[in-house]
Image 1 (tube, rainbow over the protein chains, first blue to last red):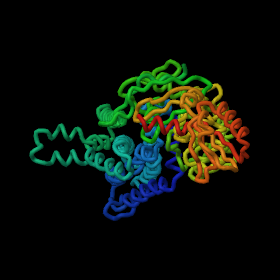
Image 2 (spheres, each protein chain N blue to C red):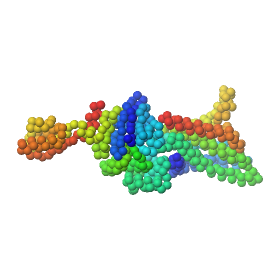
Image 3 (spheres, rainbow over the protein chains, first blue to last red):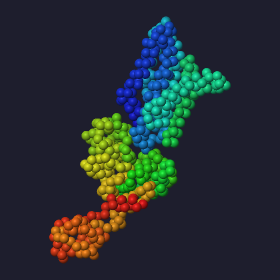
Image 4 (spheres, each protein chain N blue to C red):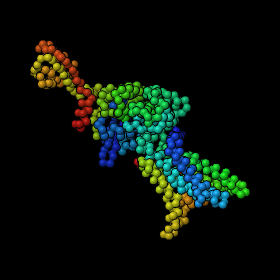
Length: 240
Length: 303
C-alpha cells in the first residue's frame, strides 16, 4: 500500500500540472484574504480570518476534484488499472492508498495558510489578540472538509474513465453536499425536513467546528461521510 | 499440476466468450494458447490472473482457487497483459521499484531484483529513461520485467511479441525460453512460427471452445500429409509417381510436380528411386511438413 501511496504523491508532485493546481489554490486564497478589498482582512477591522474559512471551501470545490480526478479514471483509461487489480493489493487498499495520497496533498496545500495565523497574531491590537481556538477549530474544519471532498473526488473518479467527467462528477457531488442541502432547506416545501437536511449538510457541521468546538458528533459526521463515499467507490469498482 | 483451468465459462451479454473450457499446464513447459482474434484467449488469461470473474468454473494455481484466494494467487503469477499497460511518465527503475513495492518487496532484496530484471531483460541502456521515451520493444521488455520481478511460479504472457521488429522478436523469444525453465509459462499468440519455436504444449481455442489440445509434436503428427516438391530438367509424367502419393503438376512446363505423402521420409526415398530409374536430372527437391499454421487454419475454420 505504501508503494501506491508514494506513487500517487510523486505522480502529482513530479508533474507541472500538480504545481499549477497548488499555486492556483494558494494564489486565489491569498488574493481573497489579503488583497481583494471586499474580502480582505486588512479592510475588515477585526483580527479575524473569517474570509479564509468562508471562501476556502469554494476553492476546494474545484481544487480537490482536480487533484483526485486522475486517480482512478486515468488508470482505467490507460489500462494500468489492470496492473493494480492483478497485484496483491485488495480493492480497499487501492482506494485507501489513493485517498490518503489525496488527503496528504490537500494538507500540503493548506499548510502555507498556517502562516496567516502568525500574521494575524501580529496584526491584533494589542498583539496576539485573536480567537486562537476559533482559528484552529476552523483550520481543522477545513482539513476535514478537504478530507470529505477528497473522498467524493475519488468516488467521482471511479464513475468514469475520463478525467474531465470525473472532475465534473466530483464538483457536482461536493457542491450538492456542501451547498445543495443547505439551499434545499430554504425551500418552503422542505420545511418539515429542514432540521434533518440541515444536519446532513457539510456546511452545517463545518460552521459548528468554526466556533472552535471540535466535538465527537461533528467528527463522527465527517468520518461517516468519508467512509460512505469510499465504500460506494469500492462497490462501484467491484460492480464494473 | 501447477495451473489448471476447470470448466471455465464467461458470458458477455448474449455472447458466450468462453464455453466450458478446461486444460492444464505443467511446470517447466511452455503452453501455447492459440486462437483467432476474439476466440477468448485474453478472457481466459484475465480470469486466471483474477482480473475478471468467471460465470462458471474455476482456475487453480498450485492448488489455490482464483475465486477463493485471488490475492494469494497474484503473488504466484506474473502477468503481461495484451496492451502492456505502463506508467509512461515513470522512469524504468522507478516503475520496477513501484511494482516491487506492490509485492511487498523492499530494501536490498528489491534493489537486487531490479538489477537482475534489468540485466535479464536487456534494459541496461534504457534503465535511466522514462518509459514514455522507450520504443515498443523496450516497453515490452519493461512489461516482462514487471511480470517477473516478484519471481512468480506461473507466468502468463498475453501476446508478448506483437508489434516487435524481427530482431526484437528473436530476443524476446530467447528471453521467454530462458525464463521458462522451472516455471510454468502460458503464452498466447497468433503467430504460428512462435509456437513451433517455443511451445511444448498447444491449446487451440475458437469461439470460446477448445478445438485442440495436445503436445505440439502429437498435433503435428496427427495432422496428416507432407508435401514433396520436386523439379527436374526433363518433362515428367504423373503416373511414374502415382504409387508414392497423390501427384499433381506444379508448373506449366510439366517439369515440376508435387506429391502428397503420408511419410515424408519414405516418400523421398521412393521418389529418388523413380528419378534414378528414369534417369532424370534433379534440380531441386523440397519437403514441406504440415506446419501448425495449416493445422490452425483447418481446425479453426472447420469448427
